[in-house]
Image (tube, rainbow, N blue to C red):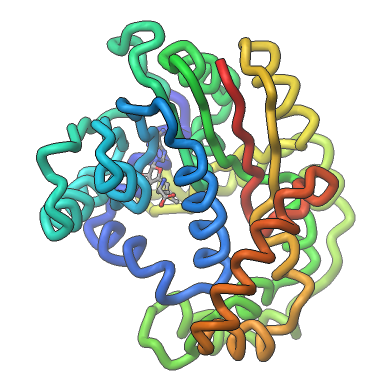
Length: 309
Ligand SMILES: C[S@@+](CC[C@H](N)C(=O)[O-])C[C@H]1O[C@@H](n2cnc3c(N)ncnc32)[C@H](O)[C@@H]1O
């Protein structure tokens, strides 16, 4: 089995993963913006959609949303803690009977027949965690899709600025005193991270050329019994567009959720988020700006793409 998959399996099956991931929209502004963008797109494209496959569905942010819209959803994920959390949330929302939960890896979609689902979705980068099988996974997602496919994967142009910004996540913390352990770490380590920073030409060149975040160090940590972050394949916009087209997707539209917000300082973002009226207007404008294909590569983490079969 590939290391990426073994590493993803160990990371996402950590017992607290479901609980932590389900709070991301209360914790980080970039997550609010990304999920809001995806939600707007999903709700705008539900005409003629009855069955949905959600690959890497996590704790159900979108599988539950679509079940509430009356769709019949297959919620597919490699992590039991994420599935358990999704079941708990689906029950609370009264849609447990409209969702089929399946534990499995995106690399193993062979049991699903061609064109089995009207809509196939996969959000917030599960495809990027399947390196070196990302193209095969996309071709399988297209194969099982009848009408529309919508995905978001890790963005190479979006990630490159992080290599020159060790405090990039601090910009998007909603409440510094919220008690989330990662938020605490970002706040407490800010000065150290700035002090230790050196621009690393080799690292940016390597990511630009190869698209891979992580590799040998993560494999060594995994072998020592640790839980490194996933080896992540980042896509260029033209690369993802060409790949989808090659596998038969038409009328492709791309977007970069977070492109507008990443230009603003944290103080302004927090002020907007804490005022319900401004927040709704801002999220609507972010959706419009981030949908411009010329900014799609500069989405905060994700490159968003959709098209028809
Ligand atoms: C960042 S979460 C996104 C969850 C959800 N799609 C959302 O947007 O809220 C990534 C999810 O992908 C799942 N995942 C990672 N690698 C996977 C793989 N190879 N096959 C299936 N699921 C995977 C993880 O367990 C996790 O639930």
